[in-house]
Image (cartoon, rainbow, N blue to C red):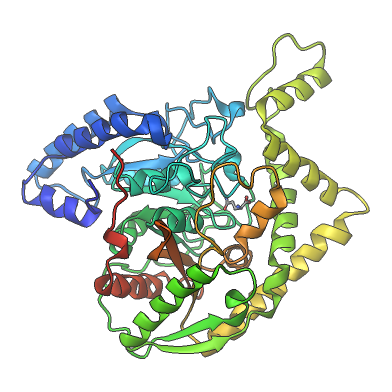
Length: 482
Ligand code: GLN
């Protein structure tokens, strides 16, 4: 069951199987494996079969789009009309969204099939999927280890063959890091490329939705459907969408790849470094030119990110007050009691920690010292990338400093968890596109190679990733889950 979207498209077009057949197969596999993996929060079985039936009719009538009849799963952060959209939180446990996110509308317009909603860290805050109200997700490669986060449910579901592909969101690495930990391919697009309308906000200036799949080719197909201007998202870019599949087979001879020296320094596990080095050598064999570059402000990315992200989350999550949105406590004494108890009961520990830190950094007297300063650092980080992209076409390095850790190993120490985002978060601070592609294994657990592109250069990233996948087979390996 590790078929790609591309293979399913071909099979459907040739009548080898119907959408109802493949949808049923995935639903059966979800029933078998989800109790162990906990990758799905909601499975929309009846709706999926109806959608598949409608898709089969369209296929029979020759009225198809790229994703007609293809089963997909969506991170439970995307609003889905009439279906619970929990964001991994007790706060939204009973929230049936009254409308679809833009991304969901786009998939529906192509008659894709939704299998269900995937587990995630609460409000997308985390790197391990342990902060979900619905319990931790397991990594299909090692059930005692984390799948990464916050889109860990989507990553585990794709890796274990519960869905051919899924959506994720990435605020500081939440598509790329779980993709790396689960041995799949994930793409965080340029900020503004994919509409955030109906995607529950964590940190609005950093959040971006994107595809998670087995291959770069599949990510290209999904991004094609997801990308584009949306007047309901004020940060959506009014810019034509490239044809992502058209450039996948471009020759990459002469492609200039920059290796940031700060990404290969202290803190990087030596076995992970070895896999990344071998991947770079593979690129050289394929004719790419490699050059060292420097991103001197990398070390300030983590503090800058956690100030910006927490400030924005404390503001975004103020809407969950038990009145306008979210869980409401029983028998409140008065309004203050209602707010206090609803929020205390509805939010988990990590979310509370972040709201408190964010409220502090935004408060009078501290705003200049923390928030404004973090915004200035953010500018420096963007400038580092701008200078690097004057010399190279893409930047490559590890996605994460180590492979998936054991569940529970870092949950008592939030700072050690925050430090794991070292290579991914500066990409969000700068608003650039980034990918993670499978590049080997350490102790049986997958390693991710990160590729970072210039603004709106997703085509070039996908091309570089696809060419790598034409010459390696890390992406086609599957975990043995039964
Ligand atoms: N691990 C990071 C955080 O906890 C990133 C999460 C994300 O990208 N949503 O904020």
